Length: 173
Image (tube, rainbow, N blue to C red; front, side, top):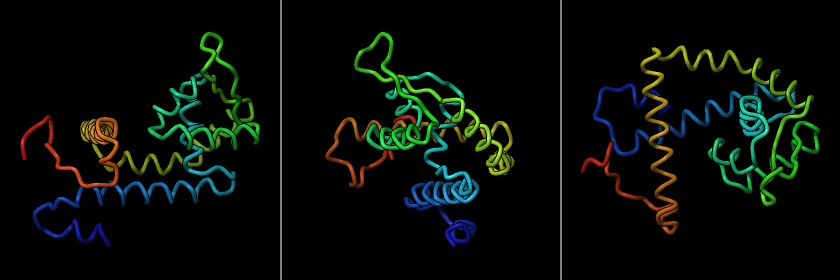
């Protein structure tokens, strides 16, 4: 329904980016959950498995940053994945406060299966854009993520409240 609304010839509103991001995320999240439902892995757990497949043996805090999630959520998912034998969490060899997270053999197999099962969805997503558009979109999404993270870090009381935007690269509205 929202896609139809955007397809109409009209000026963009201040809701188009937030609603577009929300719609895209929810649609992709739902489709990923459906694809992974037989494996018992959720879309959110898949993110962690895929990140660990890319860069195994990282700290829990590094995983939190790369997943763009909060520490409590990642910890809870890691506990579940550890109970299923998909990840191991060990004390970090040089930092006593940190935990090193890695895929187990079973976790590597699950990550590979999950990546294969979701490949069509990723292909469809990347097929929407040229390589240049893909690079631009990734850059824009990273910019949005950084801006939203900074606004929460700078003033946590702004969470959940509307904040005036300065636009791209600090431009005035």
